[in-house]
Length: 221
Figure 1 (tube, one colour):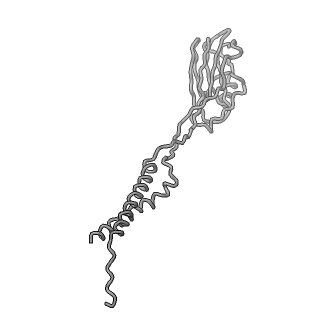
Figure 2 (cartoon, rainbow, N blue to C red):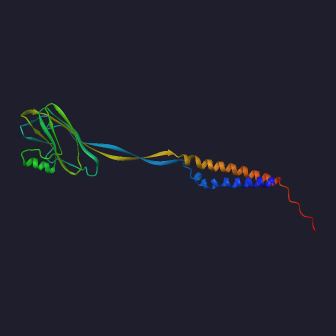
């Protein structure tokens, strides 16, 4: 019978349409069409340790003597917990000098051996009237000293020194990105399934209303 085939077709359509509705309705209730991803950016931080002129701009450096900057106590640095830690700066002198950065052991040797610069972390020979820039990685916590040793007889010698500590750290930033699956699939599946389900049910109801009642057999037969 034609009406029976049509009814079977719309019943199957109604069942198939109900499946995506059942699956995706929870997604519609908690509808959030974005995915959160984490973006990591490496940022550099800098801190000024020392900057300016030695001894009020004017010092006297006899040959082969030393000037310790900024003080004999040195700076206690803590690079061990910081990534890509460096000492960065520049040194200028109007006289010929040797500039060095020493750890505590090297500085003690420096004091014992008449200002000899031994095993420095950094050494730069600064020509008169020139500026030497530098960058030196440091990994161990401890005392560090900055010394200038004259290489010529110079009265009214002037040394300008700038020093920064720099390191890097990560900044994690959440980013929202529209999700095709979360944003489009659930509503399309639910609303499309609802339309097909509604049409199928309407068609089934129409078929049911147009189907003739089966004839009752005569009584007593």
